[in-house]
Image 1: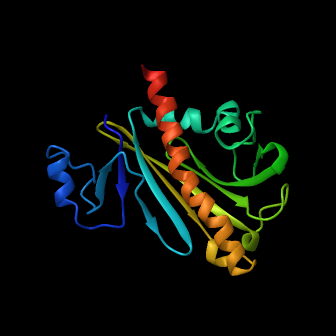
Image 2 (image 1 turned 180 degrees about the vertical axis):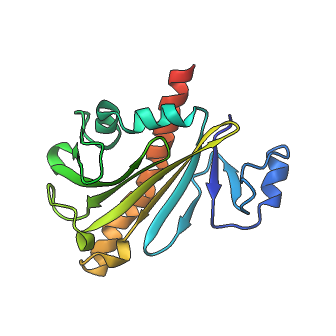
Length: 191
C-alpha cells in the first residue's frame, strides 16, 4: 500500500489520479488523495484527518485500544490507563506536562472509538466547554483500513480565542504525525 492521505480541502482530484497511476483512493467521495502528504479538512471548530493503513480493521482496533501502545503514542511511554466502555477513563501520562485525562464516549469495536479530552489543566476532568471530542472511525477498504480522526469542539471552549488557537494548532500538526506513527507501527508488525 502506498502512503496515501485523503485531503478534504481540494475537490480537484483528477490531477492526482494521473499522478497515482490512475489509482483513486477517494472512495467516490470527491476527496483528493495525496501521496506522502498529510491532508486534512480545516475548520475553526474541528480537525479532520484520514490515513489508509495496510492492516485489517480488527488489528488496527486492537492496537488503538492497547494501553501500552496508547501510552507510547500519546504519552511519555508509560502505559495509558484505559477503561474501554462509555464513561470509562482514559489517562495519558505526559511526564513533566502532567496527566491528560479523557472520558470515553462511544465504543463500537472495531469501527468507532470516541473520547472527550481536556484542553484545560493537567488532570482536569474533560467537561464540554473545556474539552474536545475525538472520534476515531475505522472503515474496512480493499487495501486495509481507512482511519478517520475528527477532533471537534474547539469553537465551544470557554477560553480566550488566542488560547483556543494555542490548543488547536499543535493538535492539528500532531494528528498528522500520530497517524503516520500508527500506520508505520501496524505495517511494521505485518512485515
